[in-house]
Amino acid sequence: MKFTKTLAAIAIVSTLALTGCSSDEEKDASLTDGSLNGGMNDASVNGLGDGSGMNGGRFGANGSKYGARGANGLPPEFSDPNNPLSKRTIYFMLDSSQVQQDFVSVIAAHARYLLANPSQHVVLEGNGDERGSREYNIALGEQRSKTVAGMLKAQGVSESQLGIVSYGEEKPVAMGHDESSWELNRRVEIAY
Amino acid sequence: MNLFKKLILASAIGMCFASTVNAEMSIEITEGIESAMPIAIVPFASQGAPLDISSVVDSDLTRSGYFKTLPPQNMPAKPSSADAINFPDWQAVRQNYVVIGRVQPNGGSYNVEFQLFDVANGSQLLGYRMSSSANDLRKTAHHISDMIYEKLLGKKGVFSGRIAYITTTRQGTQSNHKLMVADADGANAQAIATSIEPLMSPAWSPDAKRIAYVSFEHKTASVITQTLATGQRERVAEFPGINGAPAWSPDGSKLAVTLSKDGNPDIYILDLGSRNVTKLTKNRAIDTEPTWSPDGSKIVFTSDRGGKPQLYSIPVQGGEEKRITFSGSYNARASFSPDGKFITMVHGNGGDYRIGVMDVNSKSISVLTPGPLDESPSFAPNSDMVLYASRKGNTGYLSAVSINGRMQQRLVFDSSEVREPAWSPK
Image 1 (tube, rainbow over the protein chains, first blue to last red):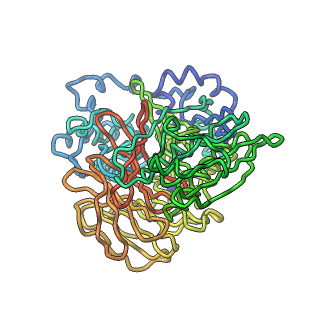
Image 2: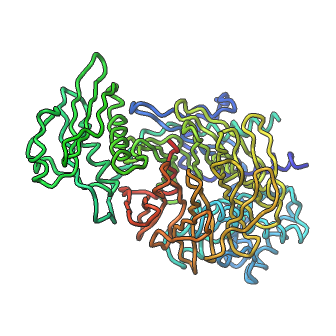
């Protein structure tokens, strides 16, 4: 069912988020422990004041007691540079969501791992370079994620093991404004 | 549902308060017109007002590029009443217009008066008295600028408006994203939302009281509406996949949004009252970035159904989809002018992205900006200027250009990435 899938995806995403950023983890550790009483309304955004020290609320999934697994908790083959599982980023050509030949074996290795570990979830995070319009790049990033998801599923990976999110051009890893940065930013990250 | 709720809560609580951010911003006029009107804004006679209103008016009019103001040290006199003005003196320093004014305390607030005179014949063109609280003096100054601008140029001023934009600061792998709202001159910049995950696509409601935007604060995309006065937020779309590109209907009751919940990105109409979504486009390609025509009858959007992104139009109730852009390999992110006569867009050719404006009737596109990485254009409420984001070297800028291409100003930020500006509709 779609709804269950969403839950699964959110669960994975939260877990990852919570393990992802250690500095925020400290800062918000106290919050995660007992104060789950904020309600659905994220009520910490203030209004526009009359110049009177108006504060914006800060959002973001961080801090964790849901330690679960991060990249560090993965088996050793994930950090062995000779093992294709050590590669968890798939790069793309400009304006394309086609997987290049070089990455087919990387995706196949992850498919084998996920098949052998059916309780393992991954989120496929699609990204693009900064050129062109931002929402279009969100759509392009999602196409890239879906292409990778399709290849994993074609090799037998269950849809319930896969989450998809597109960040478009909002999460660059290379900050330059030339092709050498852009090619690093057109990517799907397989986030365990 | 319970689990779902808990997860939402778990992510929502990772919040803390950010301090007020006043990103230092200044404005450069990078291109003006040669025939700027000479006008003298005489410093207003003021009894203890906390703001120099005349200097705000002076910088508003200068910034527009249509006026050349006279520095106070070059003024022949500093009159504050009509009978004290000796018009031949102002003719001698080649001024066309002179503005005088007075600010007087009145209980807890101020009475602000100003008059605009035609130097050639000494006639009064404008004269107003207004009451203003101390906090609103800057707003009152912008209002005066709007009135002078409209009187002398015959079109509405945009000095009273506000702009929303996104900034990002990065430290190592951590980043901090802020949705900012500032006066049109960059003053009073305030963060209305802050997140360690991306914020995107701010869009003003037609009454300028709310902003819709996209937030990844839950590590998935959702569309949020936030009321400026109270900070109250509503998560109006959080479907699996893309929840993006919100655009308000002219009556403020609906949002056009991009959702990919049914497989690929399509345009949907979201009724804000009932929260029902209706699918509008059904193409297998990418359809995104909707914008509503000001008469509410159609939606223009970006689609790559023809191979590359181009603009298409569809009636709001559904129907025939027509491609409307044919020049340039890339046309995306359309936005209508409030008068409905123009559409501005990102116009790309061979990896070079500039701001274009299309005449809705003739369909001809003029390119307004130098590129190469210009994006996110939106019209000023007077339909005369387009605000957009650009980049020079490693610095991001917000810039404004008149649709005739003759006026160009740049809002300069001291640091951080700045992007996706949106001019408030009023």
